[in-house]
Length: 117
Image (tube, rainbow, N blue to C red; front, side, top):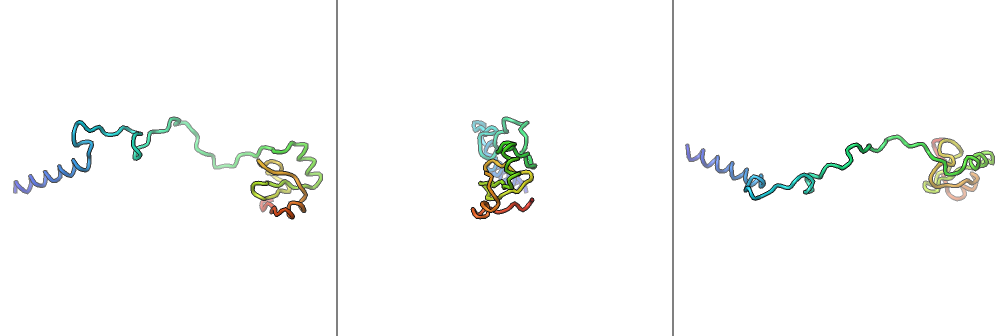
């Protein structure tokens, strides 16, 4: 019975030494936090804001005078990145890239009307 108990304790001890190499010998140093890929270092800026889920307010790409003149002439604003044109509303003259043209020109160039306006 004592032999079985000693063998069990030895087997458990051996398993622990193999499973936890940092406990194996005093000369072995375990890696510090951030030095291995399993434990990345904490970020340097803990107060950094998470990305906002709301869409930011658009900034005008065209001047207010250009927007007013285009609206009075019946022109649409074409977002040249997305291929969508706006007849008015939030994004009219305010996307990063775009230009004014008539709705007929926009359709002929293959642009599609915005579904939200």
